[in-house]
Amino acid sequence: MSITEISLENYQQEITKSEKPVLLDFYADWCMPCKALTPILEEMAGEYDKVKICRIDAEKHADLSMIYGIISVPVLVLIKGGKEIARKMGVCEKQDLIDFCDENI
Image (cartoon, rainbow, N blue to C red):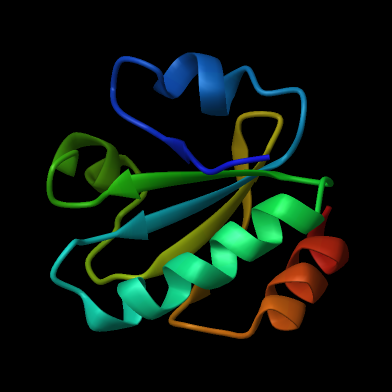
């Protein structure tokens, strides 16, 4: 599975109406921790199928960032049934992300 880029146009379909829980990564292109997190998420997306992994450029889609109260990046938001159930800030290892998802879904 690959990481899905989210915009206002596909937000409803990919996030709100998703049958699977969603791990949503808020990032910025200039953010070094975000760049460090990207390959970890890509690897996780290929191996871990309990969640759908999506990304939102927090600056490009400030409207969506405001909905979630994002004031710094990276922030990972776990969404189930269209509602936020957990949040994790900063860079972490793949196993930490898997454990985070397993504990909350």
